Image 1 (cartoon, rainbow, N blue to C red):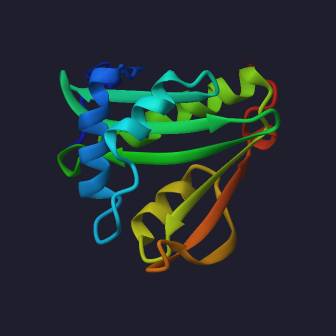
Image 2: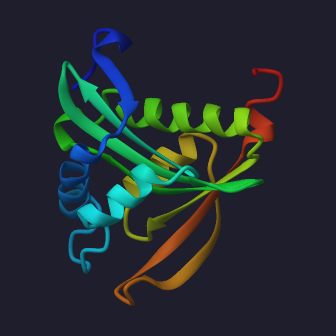
Image 3: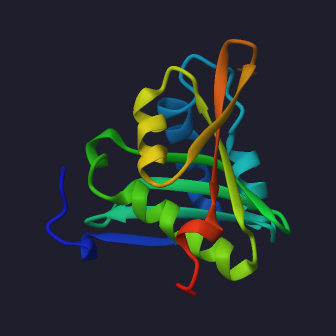
Length: 163
């Protein structure tokens, strides 16, 4: 699906009522084959936490994707990013990451980290196109079932003089 224009994508802060949808979508898209760790109550905790940002993206008014990021003083961690298969390649993932990165820069956070399933070459490529670089492998990161590739993005490189 390709949007005709970016006005078809709307991003907003998640509300508690979004937690069940985010958790189920994470289970289906991200945690498939793993124990379910991003259950609704965990998502609600992030929605309520002042150092987290939980976003929901709609495409033509329908839920299309979400992102959860935790902010520290100098670094942030992108916990989850999911886009429904029918909305992939629409720009939702890029818009969610861009929103979070710009927020991080404003907050003074300079590095964002994310872990990606080692076998998820599509996600690794997606983050690579956004400026993330592979910085290591974490053996058994996903419940001892699968390794993770750790990726980081130094925001000083891409957002210098843009804020």
